[in-house]
Length: 488
Ligand SMILES: Nc1ncnc2c1ncn2[C@@H]1O[C@H](COP(=O)(O)OP(=O)(O)OP(=O)(O)O)[C@@H](O)[C@H]1O
Ligand SMILES: O=P(O)(O)OC[C@H]1O[C@H](OP(=O)(O)OP(=O)(O)O)[C@H](O)[C@@H]1O
Ligand SMILES: O=C(O)c1cccnc1
Image (cartoon, rainbow, N blue to C red; front, top):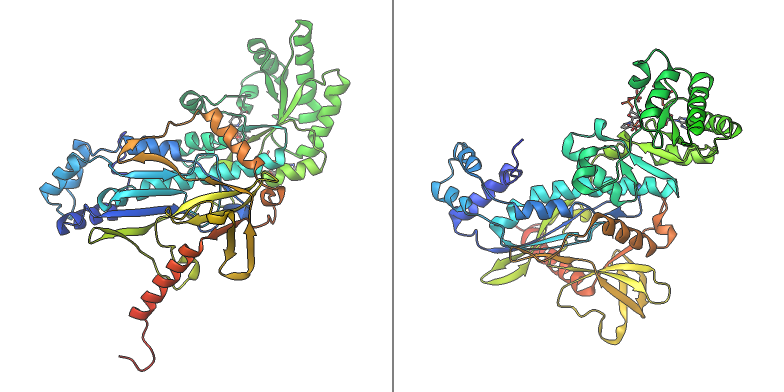
């Protein structure tokens, strides 16, 4: 696959760029916001990820000669002068975004893109592609992290991932949310994620017997060795053979790391294996489990008293098997009319799909008393925050009885400038710092918002000005488009 991602976009973006260019409207300024409408997995929050890939993409956004030649062959017969314009194209707009690792919620802007319609339209597809996938996997990983408490989590998904990029960026997303290591060496090399590996059944099968296979492997990497004990019979041969290997290592002053269970009843087998290891004086030997695990099986195994220290999680995590897509969207919220920026709305018969007009900021409202988040507050950039008098009115227009006045709060601006007029102004943090930030974020929320089953719904409130604007634009649209009975 070629390296440049300029054509990693839907054809309709190129066609809209072309039509704008032909129409002379391509320099018109526009503001788009990316958000999702529904949290995945029934979770109470999502973990924002994808920004690093977006930053790389924007910085490298150029149409190569190959791209131009390919465009020239399209049935649309793009004008040569348009292709010439693309030849010198670079992104000159501005981007604000949540930081990776942030806890984010439905219907709040996660990324804001401002610039010429020409460029803001082009980048929609790739931005959503990166944000939707990585945020989904980081959120799934966070759910797994929640149930695994202090156990070690290994990401094993590459072989089942939807191709290479998903494996590598998925491993990174899992690491952001608290996984400890990945089996994917490229992710390790590219991002500095710790890597871990045991061995496959094939290792055991290539030797005359299991004992020989264990001893040879342990000889080569004594301190890291984790032996897979289920190739033949876990309790009758695998664990006893692993114990013999561990004892041989002890005689040489070395310590085996762990055994791995990969089939059967993981609760029963881990309890029995723990007993056998302890009775042999090998209480330091840990137990790793794998086999189609996810947050539900891990929680259930823990409830059954499974003696598992480390969980290897692949397919269910990397494919987000229970919800394989996050439905993030990218909507136009302002456009330039006669030199002035005007809010714009997308109307839908489904009220949840009516967009919220105008360029907006997101503030996280943190109680000074408890240090915990109370709500996210969405307002226009020109609205003063904190409001004059220090009192913030939180209201939910769909449920007017849900009003709340807050004082003594900190308002944290959640959208950070990433690009200003085409220049990157944000230093991408180290992955370790992103993990740390994610942990701090979790610490800012009461447990009821974080629980995996039926979490409390965290408040996302619009300012009165934003709500009034939305109402006004809906009313204007209705006035113009909805006919009264008897009207022509
Ligand atoms: N005690 C348990 N409670 C709940 N789920 C379990 C328990 N033990 C294992 N599981 C899970 O049940 C599923 C078992 O799947 P499956 O029947 O394919 O595995 P298996 O019997 O080990 O066979 P295979 O050898 O093909 O892996 C896996 O998702 C595994 O994680
Ligand atoms: O189950 P996952 O969460 O995806 O974790 C990765 C799985 O990949 C390996 O299995 P392999 O591909 O050899 O197939 P197997 O399930 O038949 O062992 C490993 O033994 C795990 O079972
Ligand atoms: O190292 C392992 O045990 C491993 C790696 C990838 C997939 N399954 C297991």
